[in-house]
Length: 456
Image: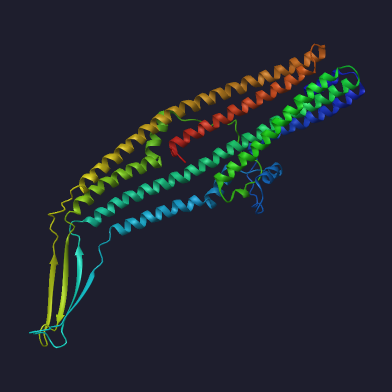
């Protein structure tokens, strides 16, 4: 628009033709911006998987022509193919198997003895055979106590697995926000470059007509090159952000083509601190896992106590050959005497582990409450700053355009003020985008603190 006003101000046929082309460029830029505003309302489209071996740069270029993908599609691809999903499932299965094994008794033992009399014997000529079966009876209930401790550990592992999967989902969302912001930054730099190139053509026409010195053309050419460099850097940022998304999604990331369908300027409702705190303490998996491990440590004290006198051994035997034609049956009992080992050290160690687990759990709760309070305040401040700047910058950008137009019409401004107006509008839009992305990431961090906690 600014370039079109400058073209109308010039009084040469060539300048008028250049202004017509500038109007077409401005129309295309407005169409692109309108498409970007309506992009969040595009319905999700499932795209076929990309060919194997396709590079991140090739996908970034192809994304321009693709209809896009939603957060639900990205999360579904992550949950379907991410290797850590199998890792979490395997850990849960291992904990369940450990719980089963902890409750089992020891296997029975078969004893077979043979005796042959060598001198002054009353044995049968073939000797004497004794066969018995022994079984350890855990009368103190140690297997049940070990099973209880394993059950609490299984609950903790299940909570850790839920935390891992939810953390991966939030990582996908974070990467999508980064990719959407990088793409919109490219659009903003592209619009500014189109405006400057049109201004450059108009200045070149005036220089050729002898109206403007060559210095103006050289100076505006330097500005165009600087904005071109900014645009290339922003495009590299898109490639980098796409790589971050691929890492977050996993092996099935090539299924996601196009731009992420996410409205960076949307302002989701943020609950109050007390409500979020209550939900965090009740639902956050790592806090639940810590409490389960405290309960498991208390069960470990019972295990240590009951293993002082673990039970008795019972044996039933049958023998043949103690004398000619003699057949015997019998039984026996093995009773451990807790004289040398009475649980010294083991019970004290188990009690110390309870104190350590309880201290760790209380520390996690305190840190979670403090972090939630900080992130909640940051999110509110960033949302307010973003909303205020968007409202202020829109009016300021319109005022700047009107001032530039009036200045050109009255002949009080040069081409460099027009360039400054274009760059100022670009900087305003970039700042709006940066603040919006920061606000979305701050809100995401609040959900991370409430639902996941620390995540690596």
